[in-house]
Length: 423
Image (cartoon, rainbow, N blue to C red; front, side):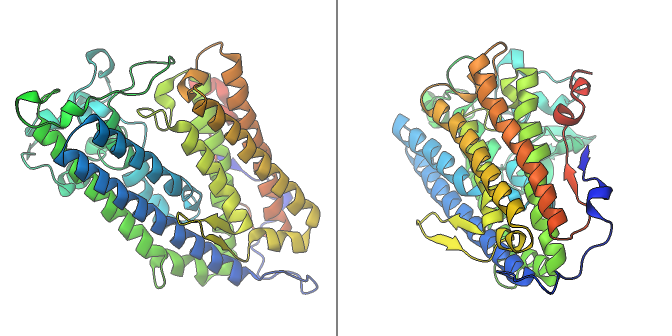
């Protein structure tokens, strides 16, 4: 469902230039070039963090223990920090949208991958929800017998991921790896994350969960696949890459891509699908990082990524501050009041998301916030939802201020048609 800007507020033609009398602090070409630089830095950092995750996974595989499992989990959480800040490049950039489902798709029918609690695995709309590929070296898919004796990146990406055209058959990416490291979170809206034992990765008689050799193979293959997918996207935004070339070829279209990503992530995706929907359903399965209880961080870094694009700034993994010509510069040159308001609202949404993050880190996990009747949790989540919706209206005003054409922002029934959520 789309949230569409009113044509009466925007006009219908894409402006080809800004007014000649404007004393611009930056020109559109410089702004979109810097936007590509931000993308390149964020995807490069995501790749670096994923390579650290792979090293931790290799250590877990080589010597399973409580310590190596904890280190792999910590590396996964660290890897989410730069990646979540890239999500703002979705929606406006086809190369990212077409690719994103391979690395960050959720929620997933995790029984496709490994053993799950018998009471939670059934899905009448997905017969593969109980496949358990780790325990099933051969199976039939759409009438064809599949030999899954060797669990490889190709098997995961070409056969298992979104098998039978069902989006819940998520076999690759961060959340498949998350499930393998944590296991199911069976605590509902109570305290506690997934608690897979390290012995699920031990070879021989000490193996728990069965098929430890295949579980190790799946974890290794999924991690290697994540690396190769991130290598592709990092290259796409480096000098000469397709993502960079596309967004910089037409600066006006590049500005639209920037604002589309900001508005769509802010409104329909984060405020709607990732936050309000879960609260309406009181369902911890709607958490973004539901196995690890890391959702508070994912939400926060998504919000930070939106602000990054508007301000043209990003703090790299090594602490380097990347800054340059920004949308803020362009908007301020046209209407300083719109720029001031949007910056204040971006700060407010980041602060509201930080309040959720701080509460979770103090022991009040995001899935506990989703509990029916939990007023404190509802207030924290809705504070961020309201702030994200509010800033989206100012992103719309920024579009108008820059003389750009109508944009279709992603919507969500939870925001646009709440009654439909329960139908």
